[in-house]
Image: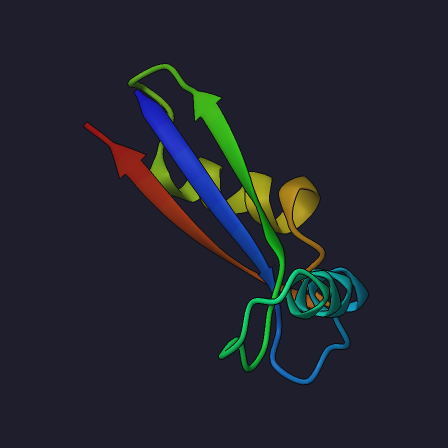
Length: 77
């Protein structure tokens, strides 16, 4: 089973990487970008026997920093 974990910063948490991307886009002449929030994508190839609870625990314990980040688990067909 293929699983994607999308990790992003919580609202209100400063995002220096997103800010740098926004500044670079403006410097390249791209207009109309109001804000940029950077995140990361983690792809996992899991055994079919891995439960949703186990996936959630992996995210909470390692893949996301629960103090400043949110995560979303997506199972890919």
